[in-house]
Length: 548
Image (cartoon, rainbow, N blue to C red; front, side, top):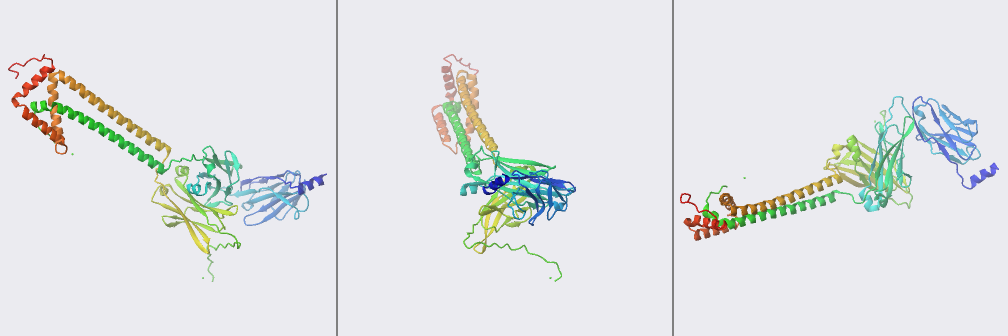
């Protein structure tokens, strides 16, 4: 019966599921236990070792429970098959040369060299010095390039984990809490930046999925620390599709200026109205002022060591293969990194090119920059094309200089010549536009508008007060005389200021001429007395001869 079941599993596509420890970081002289289990009751299980730049090497294998056999590289290792499903590998007192990827495998029947093997995902073991410090990564997510969205209707999010040690990190994308593997491209190896490392992962989605503010895009850095896997989460939400850009901010700013000019014009009209009212009052009393007062106007080589070149990368294509140039985009620095570390990391992404033969070069103000540059050692395969990422880390002060030009050049070999593709951006002005800034500006505009309305109300109260004062003057002769004297000095000042530039002086002169021609100096006081007497209803007391 078991033979029949094994034949069914083999011929009808059943596959074994191998589960093993994902990754492990240990210090020298510590003990390591790598666990492996399979769920199809296979008799044969194996442990393989793969070191950097080498193939698989057999460590131990087993034909059943408690049947353990040594492989090609068994020194320093011990293996135990305690059950049909589990096969454990132990390393006593690990050393740095034990750092490698360990694969567990199983097979249905047959000999190790003839069977069809099923492999697990591998366990990455990293061994560091006793006194080495484990440094967790700083994770940042960069928003998609607007140019890519406009030209290809696609959006590429970039997750950058930097500044971590040792080189044992895994980046996972989630969209709305669900793990996403489609459209994900992660660097196969980390990039060394001195004593630390950096790793980049990209998630490509549709523009429609990006322009949904309810979508949450999360990048999780799984980092091994204190013998446990500690996740570090970073996330951003989709865009609303109506971003506040500098162009829109300038449009709103111009609208605010226009509104302010209109309000200033309105205030000017109020001033003209008040001046007109005052001129009317002067015209009404000009005869009395000219007749009763006078004043003056006042006026701002063989045994030597060998030196090597950088190497020549030769790529051979099929006769009918098409060469596809890359699409290059530069991503601006993360605001969070600038605020927390006073550093800015620019990311240059070249994607969609074929074959895998590309070099990325950074220039700052036309000068090639190598300091602070980290470029992926190998390109990432995205189906039939490739992608390559390079990072330039600069100081925040250098970024916040709009005269600095940061250029990323993709040197791509096409038609037997090296064709450069340039992309550049300029430094920021250091005054990013946020919705809060815009709201503060709008609030300031409202406040100015309210102040101008209040100013208009004051003008109205002033005019109304003048009218009340005028009415009172008509009823009180003493106050009338004081008002006439003060108003005369005011109007004399206005005449001296505007007589040469406006027609007001001509009118005043005309009125004064009329006054001089119709009223003689000796009749002035009698005319004033008579008009006041009529206003008082005949109740004005005639002055005595001494008072005259």
